[in-house]
Image 1 (cartoon, one colour):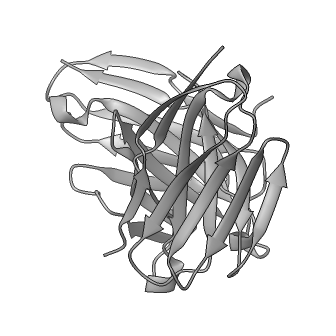
Image 2 (cartoon, rainbow over the protein chains, first blue to last red; image 1 turned 120 degrees about the vertical axis):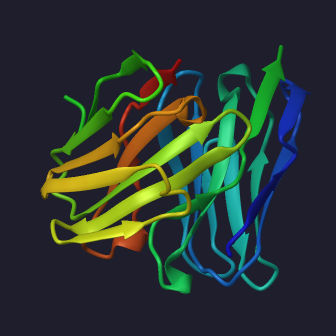
Image 3 (spheres, rainbow over the protein chains, first blue to last red; image 1 turned 180 degrees about the vertical axis):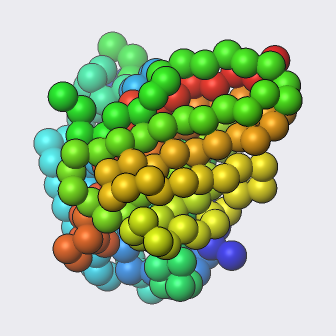
Length: 113
Length: 115
């Protein structure tokens, strides 16, 4: 059974600081996704990571994937208030013969001025 | 207009009632999914469908059923609703051309409360 663990689950940080959210998963997969969710809203795709060593950057966010370690990271550089949201990582279930995504529990990020 | 439309957006009902949540998409995707979101638990997959003739159970299908009426429509039913099915429900789609190279696209969600 595929399990996806995120940490931390809650993070309060100041503007201008750097931080990293970690996503560990339990079985082989080479496809990992990061989503953002604002309160009361749907999920917005941030990154699709498709292979070992993949790194993608968009603005102050950078995501990476290490399939050997079964670990993805989402790094926030010089945080700004607008990045306050809940961030989810999700792993593709197809490696196990199924479909759909298994999500982590999410990281609730608050960025204080 | 939204590419993935869910109706209703909000629903309050009583224990034992039959509920249907509907999802339609204009993206032309073959794959459709239903997830539920509970506070602190992330999203969990209920059912998914590759096409009209292919329906598959997800991680938490007990107490739910689905119908794929057309390529663009995928409905989720609760035959006899119970309070622990109170949650936010999302429909999602993904493309059939190299689907896993693309993210899933989510609807705006249906907030369901069962009293």
